[in-house]
Amino acid sequence: MRILLAGATGAVGTPLTRALLETGHEVVALTRRRGGAPPGTAELVGDALDRDRLLAAVRGMTAEAVIHQLTALKKAPMRHRDLAATNRLRTEGTANLLAAARALGARRFVTQSNLFGYGYGNLGEHVLTERDTFGQGGYGRFDQHIAALRSTEQQTFHAEGIDGVALRYGAFYGARGDHTIAMLKQGKLPVPQGGPISLVHVEDAAAATVAALEHGRGGEAYNIVDNEPAPWRDFFRTAAAHLGAPPPKSLPGWVLRPIPLLHAVMTGSYRLSNAKAAAELGWTPSMPTFREGIAAIRA
Picture 1 (spheres, rainbow, N blue to C red):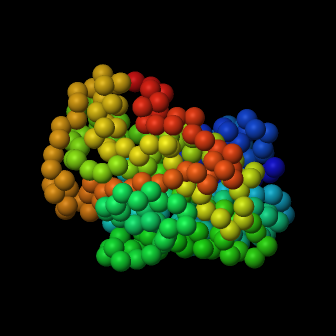
Picture 2 (cartoon, rainbow, N blue to C red):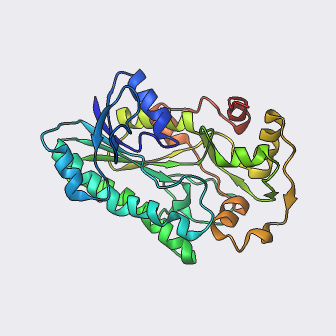
């Protein structure tokens, strides 16, 4: 299958590019500058936020699928403004990439969503499935981020002539150059007590994306998470031991309240089920818990 991949050099895009190539797909990487495409891919210079430039770039080309993995995040977002550019990529960027998909004659479109579309903060002990409410406001300033996730999903599901699939990833870890791991090694990552959060190693996220491309049902969303939600405190303590770093210091959760996104992510409770992805995509995480995933992180 010939695939236009937007976000080929990102946290998921990097292992995804490799996984697509290894399974025999042809990858055309969208990049804003020449020479920015990963090895083994064809290069397409364009900008997902510039519709005219993007449509000019794809003129005369064909592809069978488009995958949207674009974000504007270099490290974990801490404040609301840190997600502004990514929200544009999820709203305007999705619209423009869908227009490009139609111009290419693509019939498949896979977009990146995530667990925070279910809400921010303490979501309780209920294990969330794709049948639970997603994209509903009521979280104050967090609503802008939830709306952007809802937008990319709804645009994808309702695009005429396209089978669109949304992947609701858990919190990513395992990417090369992870800023939080660097801070942990330096003993600069205090961790508050919080509830469990559903995680997914980026290699497993990539494998799930290939499975969704090949087997996902149009108009459907899939939770892409590992098997065991875990508190960040357990995650980072285990990571510190594996990396030979000092154990992270504890701090009360209220200390993070002036940093709203970080506070919500670190102290909230987010439990998701991956049963639908297992049943319909044939995907199960190769790293079923954070312990196996941390063991795969290079010191």
